[in-house]
Length: 541
Ligand SMILES: [Zn+2]
Image 1 (spheres, helix red, strand yellow):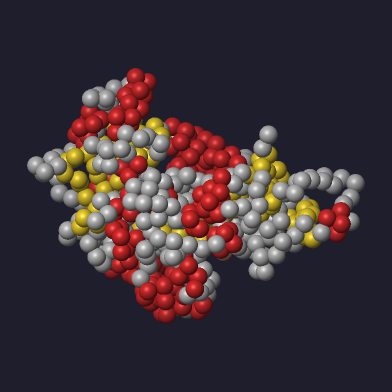
Image 2: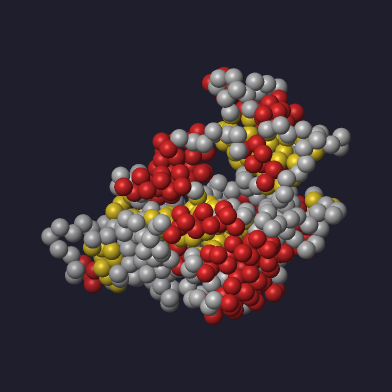
């Protein structure tokens, strides 16, 4: 048993009572605790870890999409995407929306965006919206563009881009806030669909040994769905949510109201199952869309320059600062999405400023993604962590794999070496935690454990290691990022993240031993059993 405690100690057995870990130690010592009703599970030498924790997974939205939308993450060509759209149209009434998600030009044989012109033949009478796997851009067909009144004359909105062909006509691709011109027209999902999406996905989490996650962009309808599942006794995960704060001070105030209506973490609903953890703000866009806010021009196709494009902030930087101050002064944690070096600097400097003005320990303000932090940003994170228990990067190693080919193309060679500098972060004393950003990448944490060590892209378009291996960490560090270093980001470090007496009995059992398996095999780890608060929630055949 890999306990992931502070000494990374190994044990032989554990005892569970009333959903908590009663004791950890040798077989003999644990057997001495057994009573008449005790159930004994012999794992036959398999490996145990704490239940894994994902600090950034859009479970509610992703689970909904998997159930009801066209899934495109494994499409190899534009033609295949068009075919999947065409196949779904007969089931719809004219005018009804067709939604899909998961495409990525980095994985398509054509290495280009899907365009409205590709989709129009397949869907002349229904609006279509296909979201890119990152969620930072998507493509509409012409029918949907007409509904949204997006024409050659439409100006780019603040913090958004309407992609255009050489003649200035909309190509169908909409980036960042330009998406909302269209997506605001899509009818919201029903409460029943919302619940179904989460409930079904909980099984997937259990199958991968994941027992806790942070769902980092919710609104009232998602909160209600979680709450209803909790009340029905069906929420068999620790879920910590961040409420979307929007782009204005008014929208941030509205989010604060929702947050303050719920218990303050570590207090929870349902004995550690549902926590209203704080607010989520977007500082910038995506490395895939080349909208993240960077100091040096974006690259494209690895060696070319995307001249004049350094991305942009998605919220006015001064408004951002006011939003953070609002939450901080209310004692509420903030998680900010920041991918580019410019965005990350702005975020950590903002955290430093509000913490200096109102010193508060333990709010754990985080930097979500933190893809290419500057030296300055890393220093600030280290200082904030020591001084205020804040400034934690929440990083997704599988970006380097699943969207690694488009990332390698856009970041260019030099900047790529600085992507997710895990080893440097650790050397500088910065604690980081891991996640999937599901559905941006697949949910299984084994991909993250593997990617943190191997740093390989899915397709190898620009070689196997376009991000180098100098920033690789070992499996012990990687596992820590999904266990003991992740738990505090959910405000649950007293309950989860390690196998120790008194903690919740969240346990994952693996066919292979993570610490002796060749690192190249980590992505194939096989979970055979998962316990959540002492109950077996998954068991392989
Ligand atoms: Zn995300």
